[in-house]
Length: 562
Image 1 (cartoon, rainbow, N blue to C red):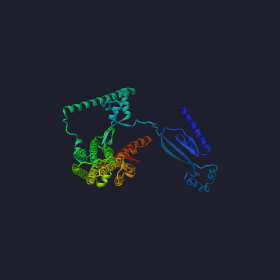
Image 2: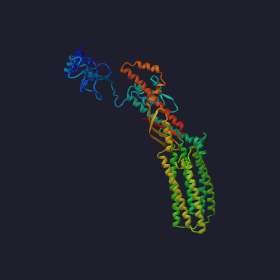
Image 3: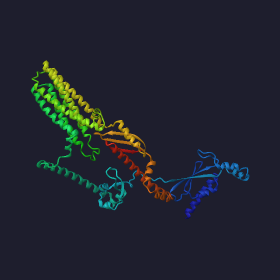
Image 4: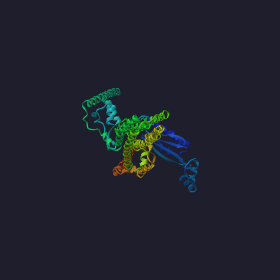
């Protein structure tokens, strides 16, 4: 007590000396004694003894004959001038002081907390993560505090989480040290690896067992995809092109025609490429996994791209080669009667497959509200597009080959037949170039149509909680699946009002009346501030759900708060 009294007297003496030097009335010095604050006068700082208040009070002193920053003369100055004639003694007394009485301005500021570079005490973790990372059992989590939070998934409203600090404390209580937790985690990792190896071995044995005894399991759901839509078109094309290849190959062996050889190679390329498309369709319906969170939809585009490259290498390349060799080393051609018959049958079958593809594209384009041309150019369904282009090229190729063979029959000049082979190769090269271009554009991620982007943006901007939308990106992920991303400037007043509408106003007013100290104010603001942030998250979820409901093509929505 003696030391505190002496320290207080020392501060008082220092403050009195400062006030005398700067001609500040001693009454102010007595009034300021014991405050935690900073006194500023003309740039000099005097620190007073601190109290137990958890705030910092800044006191700024202004003399009445010196205007404050941005202000005019004070009222005290004008009052002194008006009373100078009525009380000359007082006026003379004031004239002896170099400055007039001061004005005090107090500003309370909460102390800033230092959280450091890494702060995880308030983090939430799920029960599964607590058991995996901290090697706990479900029974260990029952005694911990359970907190209900909004779920990030569309299929659940809320889920239970735990404070990370509580989980860490429980883990230390169960295992005793971080080293023990690390050893247990390593053991569990080794067991997981062994389990996966056993699972792979068991699956292999099960597969061998099914091959030996036969599989009585019902047909998989992927098989039903080849009974309708693009799968049906691809399967029909595989069957027809396979038969065409067989008969064209026999006709080439019989006649030796270069054009017939090109047509046989053309049908073989179509059959192989459409088998690749069937593989892409079956792979595209696989369920998304952690390694591929957006699914395997692009497998159709990858299969179509490889198909285009295959057409170019196998179909166009061999046709050009055979046509050039026919020009360099012409050979007489045998009777072309069988070749004409096979080409006529091929024209009918290829035309039938072409009609199936055209009808499927028309139906899909009508559902999307697009024209036939737009649907094909934008490659909305790559599998059907490949069948359409291949069969269109097949029909034109048959007509071209038949024309050149007819000229050879009439003139006896085999060069026409070789030119027909070159023409079929050029046609296949053009088709492959188109398929490579459209599928590459789809794979690199292109934007949807500006009209669709504008419609999505207007839907967001028409919401009362949204002030503005910035940096909009709407990407076509393939197969009419859109990923939408935007920076959203929310109206904080509307969000806060939405929060207050769900609260008991009388209870909130009662809590406000209970605020007496800075600690009470901090507790009040932290409670309601966290709830308002949760309300903002709920608004984001609501907007994302509305976008998906009104636009079925939008599968993934990322709204970032600006």
